[in-house]
Length: 474
Image (cartoon, one colour):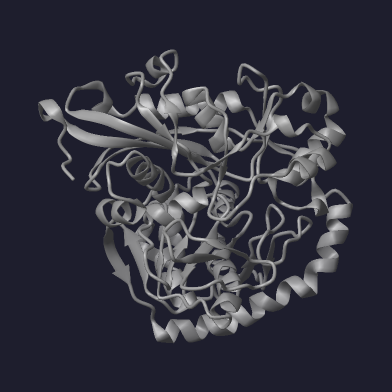
């Protein structure tokens, strides 16, 4: 399809992503040309009771800032033909009848629902029990991306993926809220409405642009990373981290997710962690203010594989897959006087790779092999993290041309949902590309096999102590 609109301007779509630590806006052509990327931070309030909350007003401010920062939107050379917003989850927004927040949003990192689970329904139940006034006052209880869609269009929806069904009236009433407080179901990637006239100027856009229903940013990352074939996998990156693998059939492993993939005829299996990306930000912060992200990766690249006998458990915010223990805690094991902060950095990067393998191994054994792993986010110094992941998993690692895969996935959804491309698969083919491929080193893989066995042994050995420390407010 032509990428040039009437009058000579290029046709593009706008992807929006409400991430955990920042919002992103990407203006992307139908051939994958990136016309501009905007970013703005989103603060989180953490508390000793396990809270991890964000002000939804900060979401909107960040989205508006990120979008307005794209210079190409100011001229006539690029025409925005469609919009789609995706976001972090499961994160619960509590909104009134004017779509204004009644209270802070409970992010997916919030652990106050405890053993009830990591999903949106346990958060709704917690809200009804612990903040009954807010629960009663709420007109809408919704995910981050559905809240964004409501603000953009005025239309409320509970977006659904594949064969996913809407939360039932019985389940919602059992959780302590009214069923009408959750919007009707709508498949993601379908038209939601048009950009409101009162909202468009805040974004620097014209009113009436079609808006497509979004989805969680993990699913969007699968599209933006270019996954198409069975065996294609994505490291979802971001604050939490996770892996999704395309399979040609339903592969069930207890504790790990299995769902219809965004593309027809494929399944996606995998699991999301809690803080592998956040652990990198954490080690940089505690190592000293003189360390930039590039400094961290450069220091880690200079340390040999295995960090001279140091192993890291990345459970800094509890852990989701595969242990599902909100009381899990992080740990360095093997520390000596010879280890410095570069070793700590290397161990953190390796711990995140071990966490991916910890999820992937049972899936591979069950019949969902990994052919190639696509990464998300920006490239690291000397591709050190990509190489660690390739050597740990024993598969090639591809670096996408546009590393911000969730917001690119949102753009692909916008294009397919409005007919600018034939379908999602055509959008993935046209709008994604690989910049370079990192092959695994068999010699380093052997070293990581030994260390992974140590990594696997640590959580069972330390879980009781972790729980004791959690009970003591640690």
